[in-house]
Amino acid sequence: MATHAELAAKLLRDAANFFRNVGEQNPPLKDQMSDNADVYDQVAALVETNPTGELEMQDAPEEK
Image (cartoon, rainbow, N blue to C red; front, side, top):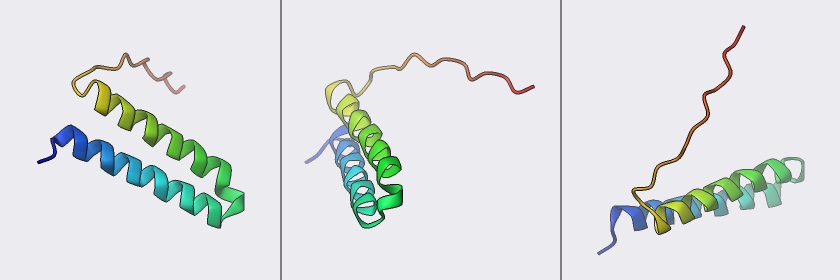
């Protein structure tokens, strides 16, 4: 039986593969889709290696 973290990582990796496939089929979007896929792979790795870890988030700049 898979843990929640294992399932989450699998879904993230599947989404990364989806983005890569979209990029392969749409050359104008390839760079953007590749960047998206890389982020999903990175988050999958975080979930796998440290499922309860916390991210330090920078505050978004305020709009003027």
